[in-house]
Amino acid sequence: MGLTSPALFVAVCVVAVGMLALAVIDRPRPRRTDLQLLTRAARVVSVSALVVLLCGLTLNNQYLFYTSWGDLFGSSDQATTHTFGNTAAAQTPHLPGTGLVGQRLPGRLPALPAPGQRLQRYAVSSPDIAGAAQVLVELPTGYDPAGTRTYPVIIGLHGFPATPDSYLRTGILAAQDRLVSQHLLAPSIVVVPQINVPRSLDTECVDGGPGQPRIDSWLSHDLPRWIVAHFRVRDDRLSWATAGYSYGGWCAASLGLRHPDLFGAAVVFQGYFRPDFGTHYIPATSDLAQYDLVRLESRHPAPLSMWVMTSRQDSLSYPSTAQFLRVARSPTAVTATVLPAGGHRFAVWQPSITPALTWLGGTLPGFHA
Image 1 (cartoon, rainbow, N blue to C red):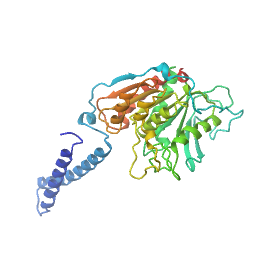
Image 2 (cartoon, rainbow, N blue to C red):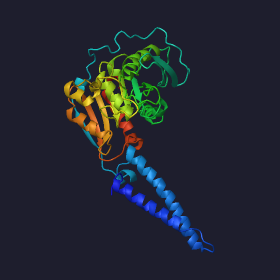
Image 3 (cartoon, helix red, strand yellow):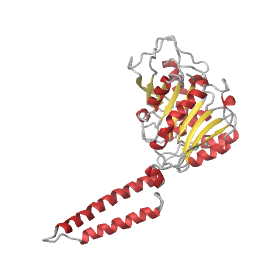
Image 4 (cartoon, rainbow, N blue to C red):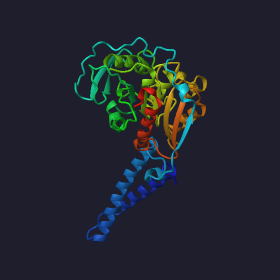
């Protein structure tokens, strides 16, 4: 009986109802023995435990945190790695498109909100989001806004529901610091924007219709130009990458594949390759087909280096990822890690952080140590 099978849920329901019936029938009586009292207490506790178990099964069946008993208890086979396309073809220095052409570092940068600190917090306004969005910036050790050294950029993209601070808690930044100290990755500026604007909205990083947020434009136009105007960054596409998990993984893939003139690489942890809108928001646009990355790759493969991680048991990530990998071809270059088991949760993709960032440091020229 599988962990997510309806039969298991029904069986637990039946047992819970049975235990509840026994507890109700076994009404308190005078002069009960200690054994009878313990038996009644055990039934009441069992009912409570079964109700908690039912709640856990309901949440797990909805979000697929664990997809099998082996996944729950930590037993799984080895991952497999696949490569597609040609890395050299993906690393064309210049592509048609706006990119960051014409964007130059100002002679004097705006003051940092927290001078001397690595973590900077901003509220960045844009007409594309009809207001301001939170943006966190993690600066590399030794960053000097008055210096001349420039740095590569990673756009970090969080999941849903979450905030930019959620990205900081994943361990990605700590892994970056370790790899930098080991000379496996260049010191980088990490920019983590809020992508569910307003905060409760699952925008899937697409441009909505009139009166709706235009998150794709915010992330691919206004935000990069704001970054160039505020920090000492490189402006070539081989020094810019996206990285995200789950919903943020989808956004990382979409930004990279749809804007290769700006980004040279995308790191995707359990993301997907078609938008997955919730019930509370569907963008009022007739052109959602442009965000079908499987269709886009099959017709117009982009010169982009990608590191992709998924699990065969992840019903959100795996189906569209598998379809994407079947059509991926040069000039797209993909390194894909596929786990045989594992649900859609942090513990599944967290062990892949260091290999992914090591790949980035060894693949994209701007991130070479």
